[in-house]
Each structure stands twice: as C-alpha cells, then as structure tokens.
Image 1 (cartoon, rainbow, N blue to C red):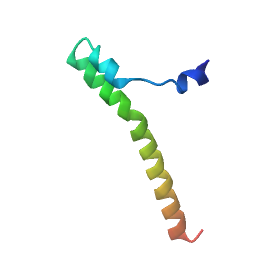
Image 2 (tube, helix red, strand yellow):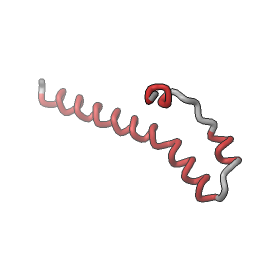
Image 3 (cartoon, rainbow, N blue to C red):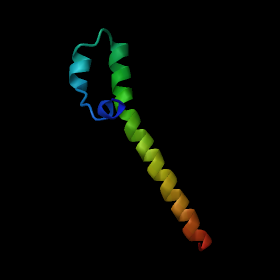
Length: 58
C-alpha cells in the first residue's frame, strides 16, 4: 500500500484552487519543491564526495 502512495499523481493546481487561505497555498508550493531540494542535496553530496576522492588519488 505504501508503494502505491509513492506513485500517486498530485494535482497541485487543483489543491491551490481549493485552498482555504494563502497559508495553505504557500505550504503546497513549498511541499512540492522539497523532493527536488532533497535530490539536489543528495547529488551535491555525491559530487563533492567524488571530487574529494579524486583529489586524494583514490
């Protein structure tokens, strides 16, 4: 059941349209960017680790 919930499509435009107030809209927008920030941070961490390893000659 958890696996199915990971692949559900979320219509952000629909959520913002039905939002009760502007605070909810801001939360939806921030929440939609969090996965991209996490993936970007992971990619940066991997890049810096590879760069450090290459610099040390390993």
